[in-house]
Amino acid sequence: MARTQNSLSINRTKGNENPKERSSKSPDMNPKPISPVSGGEPSGSGLPPPSSPETDAAAEAVVSDLVTSLGRRRLYREVTLALRSGLREARADFSFLRTRGLRGLIKFLQSVACSDESVRLFRHSQTIPELQVIPVLFQNTLSSTKDNPSVTLDHVFGVDPVKINSPATDNEVSLALRVLEGCCLMYSRCASQAQKFKAIKVLVNILSIRGELAQAACLDALISLMLDSSINQKDFDECHGLERVADILKDEDVDENIRLKCGEFLLILIGHVHGKENSPIAHIHEDIKQLFGEKCASLIWAASQFGSTLDPDQRQTALQIQARRVLESLEIQ
Image (cartoon, rainbow, N blue to C red; front, side, top):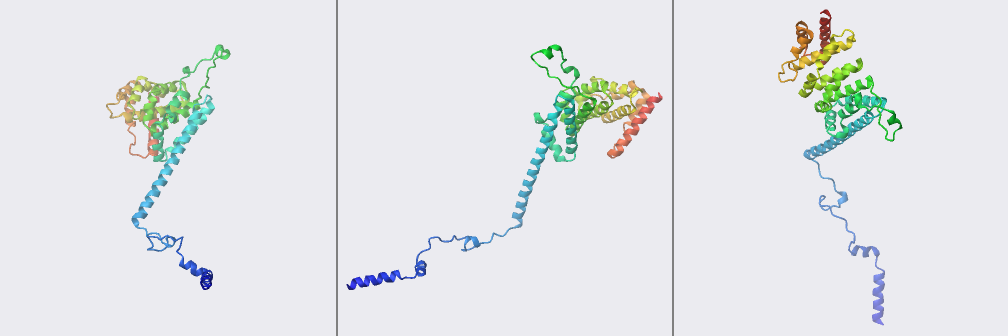
């Protein structure tokens, strides 16, 4: 009986033990993590390591590169979107849609010319077949009318339909020539690509059959095609382009603005070719003598050396003045 009472008293003592004391004696089942940075303190109470100028500069460089990359991607998406939209309409069967697409391409080229990065992206885009502008121009707006099929009753009542494109107007042709000029000035390979479509022959033909609006744009496009392209200069010589320009310049029935434009064309062309013996049209001085006479040819040669050191606005004014002098000298003869 004594042993039983002793064991009961021991059990009562253990049952009456304070829970706080029991928890303090038991080992902790969820110890807090120790942070090596804070020297044994819990990881949530530690401070970040101090930064150095080198790490700050590296972080800024990474952020700057990321921002530049994102900006370049955004710009490239804008370039490709504008090209795809303009080219899609420039391929249309109807002239008014092609005209709208060409206007969009002109606005696009004007915006591209304001940024070196945009120009670089445009040049890159012209290496991608579906974004190339030159083929679309010559396969649609600048294509010869004889390439379009003639419609007969067999086509109307036949089983196989024939695709008919509405003819290009002078306004559409002039816009296409402005697009061609802009592409060649921003990317010289566009001039080489245009040569595959016999661009010089097409443009010389436009001078002969189109109106004043298309003729003025054609003269500017011819200059952009021949500036640094010997193969296009050779085509111009073989197509007797100089004789065609001279005929327009000497024709008093032609509008004076077009005649002045022809004078500017000759001055720019002669000034650019002067001193380049390896040019296919290096003999242009002799051709000018035969076409205009020695006295007028001397005046044209002297006038072609206008203000090369002037700023663009002053050069344009000087060019217009010299072109009028050439025109006046022809009228005196």
